[in-house]
Length: 151
Image (spheres, one colour):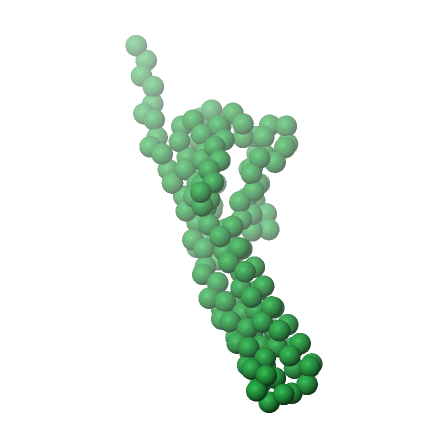
C-alpha cells in the first residue's frame, strides 16, 4: 500500500500596497486652492478667468483623487493557493483557476499576467512598486511554481 505525500495546507498571499497619501494631499491642495479662487472671485468680483481657473483646479483635484483611489483599489488583491486551484479575490470579485487551466505566469511592468495553455490571458493583477510588494510577489510566484510542478 503506497502512501501519498501529505497535501500542502492552503497558502494565502496579500501583497502590501502603499497608501496614496502624497497623491491625495496633492489632490486636496489643488481642490482647496481652486475653492479659494472661486471664493475670491465671488467676494471681490474679480475677472472670469479666475473663476474658470478655480473650477478647473477643483475638477483636476477631484479627478486626480479619484484616479489615485481607483489605482489603489485595483492593486489590492489576495491570492489563495490550494492543491486544486488558484483563487484571486479583489474586493467582492473572486476568480478561480484550476491548475490545469494555467499555462504560464508572466511578470512585467508592475503586473502579473496568467495565461492558459493556448496563450490566452486569463487574469492580470496589478502590483505596487514597493520593495515589500515585489518580495512578497516573488515568494508567491515560487509557491505557484511548486503547485504547478505537482500537477
